[in-house]
Amino acid sequence: MPTPPSVADELKSLRIERTAKQRSLPSWAPPAIGVAAVAVVLFVAWKLLAPRVFVPEVETTAVALVSPAQAQQLLVATGYVVPQRQANISPRIGGRVAKLFVEDGTVVKKGQLIAVLEDQDYRAQVVQAEADARSAEARERRAQVEVRDAQRAFDREKTVQEKGVSTPAALDQVTARLDGSKAALSAARGDSASARARVEVAKVNLENCYVRAPFDGRITQKLTDIGEIVFGALSAGTGGRGGIASLADFSTLQVEADVSESQVAKLKIGTPAEIVLDAFPDRRYRGKVAEVRPRVDRAKATVTVKVGFVDDPADVLPDMGAKVTFLAKELDEAAAKAQPIRAVQADAVVERGETKVVWVVDPQDQLRSVPVITGAPMGGLVALRDGPPPGTKVVRRPDGDLRTGMKVKEKQ
Image (cartoon, rainbow, N blue to C red; front, side, top):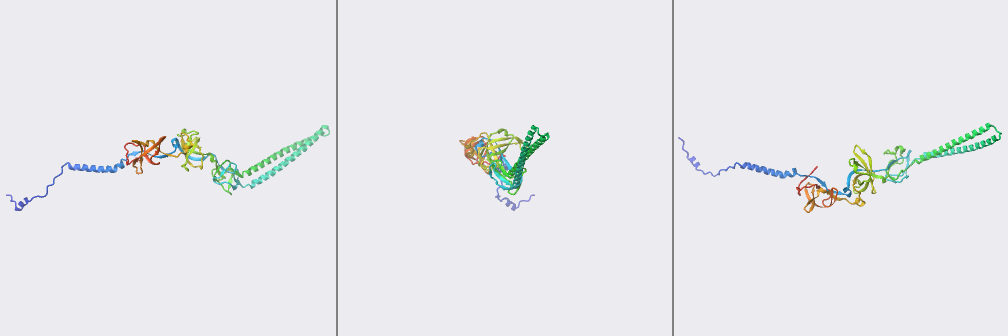
């Protein structure tokens, strides 16, 4: 028989349970909560990473300062200023420099005395040659006297022979004397001419001690100093030390620029150009093509083009670097001196309503629109009468999806 419940068990069954039973969640709730959590995480990640990962690429250009010449630009080349007439001056004979009258930068005229070599030996040679010449002239005069005396003896003997009172032997004797004296006179005249020539040689050698400028120009480099020995004509034209000085004619300055052989067909003699020197970037000189050298540098595939200065090349020095802009149309003096103006690629300007704007890329690679007022077209550019300053980056061919504050990346 089963055991009857005790009093304690009966009392326990009468106790009221105060804790409410927990209700379980529906079966679909946990997956829904997980999907929501993932969506929240993805949304936050998109907000944080999308601006960095999915940045649109744009093509940019810059607002530039453009001269009127650049609006007529055919092509651009670089080169150096080269005088077309220059020389290393050296005496025709060697010797020690006794006097020097020039320094670097000295302006000289043709025939101006530049230096003097020690000339004592050559002066003595002139004195000796002149003395020899006088001696030869004296012998020539004595030979002339002998010829006249022999001629008179011959004439007398001829008269006597006609009278029949002399012998043939006497006539032969005076004839031989006359012929001998004439031969001696001829030799004396040769000696005299030779002596005079030696005088001229001695004088030329003496004159060669005086080194003179062969043409008008400016001394670009002094190559020697007083007391140094120069080695005559052997030292001329070597490009190194040994001569007296280097001379250049600054009126013949031209820019020698290397032009790609694929572009040289665009140029011809007289093609206008604008020259900007590295030393004077704020100056612009008008120029013209003076020569297209008929030779191609195979190593560089370029042709040397010489461009002469139309404007006075004031302060221009040899070997200065230069940029040459070859033009489709010649500029007048006013246009050549006109100040550069702001310009930008025409496809960077877009219309927003009645206003023209450009999309500027700031240093943080963020966009902002800036209103502009445009001027006349300049080839592929358009002038800006009002707008961002030179050097500002702007977007080319902007589309309608751009907005202020958007972060962008430049196309490489």
